[in-house]
Image 1: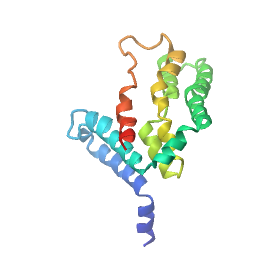
Image 2: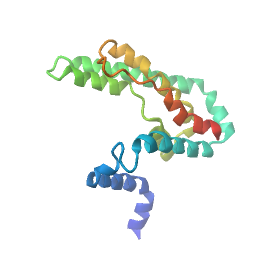
Image 3: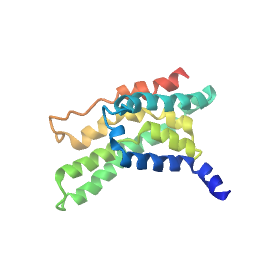
Length: 180
């Protein structure tokens, strides 16, 4: 009986392990153009569904209250868009004297400038009992990501791969919450 209780408690992690195992066994199901059509289902439907469900659980009073926590949102924005990218940049300055490939270091800087995926951040914030409403309101950092990227990598992005604009994410991240 303890195993069943443990499985009920850890259902999310078990689901992740099963999904990874399934992807390892049959990767063709999840490729672009495959039967699951992840370019549509993940990019639009899944993210919008997560935010719609999140929005359903938010009370209007909580959302209004979260909007006025300016110091919290300012801290999140500064930490995500300035402090962490700058820290990674300093670390990469140390690594630049090693024989590590220059483009690998630029890739690490890019990852250092990226905020966590909004849908994952909301789910994980809710899972640990955090302030889900404030996390949902903090999605503005997704739109601001090009600023630190441009600051740290100015002129180093290959011309064949222009950076994509994050505004389309507003339709999958913010719109479903707004209509709730």
